[in-house]
Amino acid sequence: MAPVSIRSATHADYETVYGRLAPRSLKAWAAIDGDKLVGLAGFSFSLQGRTVLFGHISDELRAHKTFIVRSAKALGRRARHYRAVAIADPAVANSAQLLEYMGGQYVATLAEGALYSWTTLMSPLAQPFSAQQDNSSKVRPKPVH
Image (tube, rainbow, N blue to C red; front, side):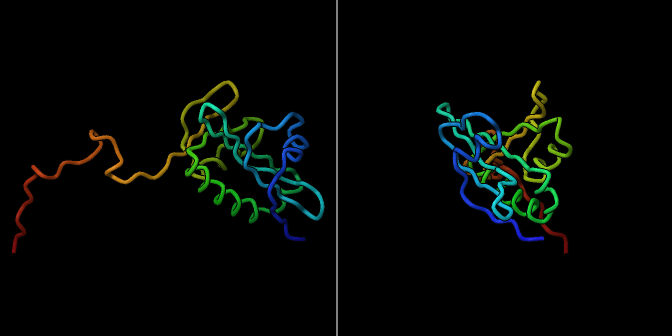
């Protein structure tokens, strides 16, 4: 089995896979097996500030499990950076499990499927005041010798 390669995706790749015009603002990668487009994943950015994670895994790409797992983890790290959302397609087996593996957190069930979200890692200082711990008034017990 030949290795699958990755390249930056184009709007034409998106239109080939999904059969509709690509979003105006797009950051995506194409999985190529030989000269055939076998997968597509990335982010679409809206003017309202929403970032949507999307992906398509063809039947040919499903044979490359290690490639899928490694790529999904890398995409999940980027999803956290972008604070992305995604919807698990109920017609695709294990799509919800893949989004969870990528670090997505279940939010709600919509008519289209289960909604997942990624959030950025925040330092304690960046959290809302109510979420910060105030240790100044706590008395620490003395160690017993």
